[in-house]
View 1 (tube, one colour):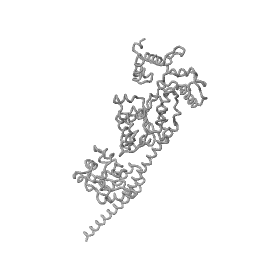
View 2 (view 1 turned 135 degrees about the horizontal axis):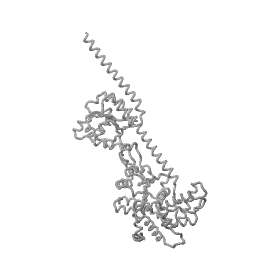
View 3 (view 1 turned 60 degrees about the vertical axis):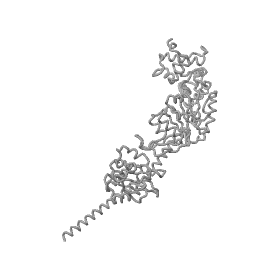
View 4 (view 1 turned 120 degrees about the vertical axis):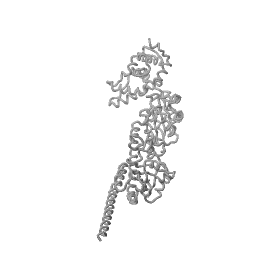
Length: 535
C-alpha cells in the first residue's frame, strides 16, 4: 500500500512539474508575442528570438531569409550575431548571394504546412545538397528546423533554427516555432516596411537637396555670356543636342564653365523637371566612387551601416553629370560602361540589377584620346561618351567676351555686397584684356569678386592681377606686340624667376596654374630655349 502511494505521489509531482513548465512556456511566448510586433529593426528581432526562445529549446543560431521579387530566388535578411557559420570562408556568400528556391530544401519548407526538420548529415551524404546547406554542415550544424513566414496570405520567406546536435528539434520545440511564427512574420513585414519608408525618405532628402541646388543655379543658354565666333558655334551645338537623349561630352580647360553648360543642356531638355545629379569623379577616393554612383546595401563593406541609393538611381528620369570623368579609375570604367549600355546598375552587395533611365553628360579637362593611347582610359568607354562632343574655348581665345563677362560679375558681386552697382575704368579693363587668364572664366570671376570687396567707391580702377604678371606687363603705349609675343615674354619671365624649374613646388607650371604637359607644349610652340633663360 505504501509503495502504491509513493508511485501516485511521484506521478502527481511529474504532472505538476510538466504543468508548471507549460505555464512558464506560455508566459514566455505571450511576452514574446507582445514585444516582437513592436520591434522595428533587424538586430532587435534576432536578439529577442535568440534570448527568449533559447530558454525554451536549444539551438545554435537562427536566420530569417526572404523570397526575392522574382519569386524564384531567396536571400538572407536577418542574421544572428551568434551564427556558428560566421567564421566559415564562404560566410559572406551565405549572407550576400541569392539562391534558387527550387533547391530541394527551401522549396520543401514553402510546400510544408508547419515546421520541417532536415538532417544535414543525410543531405550532404546524398551528394546533391545545395551550397548553403554544405556551408552550414561544414560549420558544424547537424540539424535545421525551418518554417514559412506568411503575412496577409503571402509567403515572405523562411525562419530557420540551427543545432549542432541531432534530435534538438523535438515536437515541443516545433510547436513553439509554430506558435510564434505569426508574430515573427508580422515583425519582418514591419521591418521591411520601415526600411522602405527610410529609403524613400532618404531619396526625398537627396532630391530636395538637388532641387534646391538646381533652383539656385537654374542656368539656361541666356546665362552663358559670349558673342564671339567660338561661343556662337558652341550655342549652335547646344541647340542641336538639348532635346535629344544623346550622351554629351564637354571638353575644356579648368574654369571654362563646363558645369554651367551641363546645367544649361539639362534645363533646356525634356528632363528639366527632374534632377540633374552631379558626381565629381576627382573629388573623392577611388574606393568610394563606386558606392557614390551605384549605391550599396547595409553591411556590404566596413562602414556601410545602412542602405544607400546611388546617384544613378537618384538621377533616374533626369540627368547624371559626371564631372572630371578623366579621373575615374580604369577598373570602375568597366562598370560605368555597362551601366550606360545596359541602362541598369547593381548596388554593392545588391541581389540583382536595377533598371535606370538616365541621360549622361560627362566633362573633363583631359585629352581623352591621349589618355586612351596611354592606357589610362578605356577606348570603348571613350567612344560611348564621345557621341556628341562640345569643346569650350579658353578665355584667352575669346577675349572679345571679357568686357561683357567683367561687367556681369561686377554687377553680381556689387549687389551681393549690398552696394550700388559698380563699374570698371578703361585702364582696368585694358589690364583685364591684356592678361591671358590661365584659370579662365573662373579666375576672372574670383578676381573681380575680390576687386569689388577691396574697392572704395563705385569705380574699379585697380585690378589685383598676379604680382608676377604685373611686374612683366608694360603700359600699352610702350609696345605694339602680338598676343603670342606677349605670351612668350610672360612665360620667359616666369621661368627666369623660377630659375628654369618647370614642374614641382615653386615651378613655373604651378605659378602659371598650368599642367606640366601644357606648359611644355607652349614652351616648344613659342620656341623658348634654355639659353634664353640665362640672359
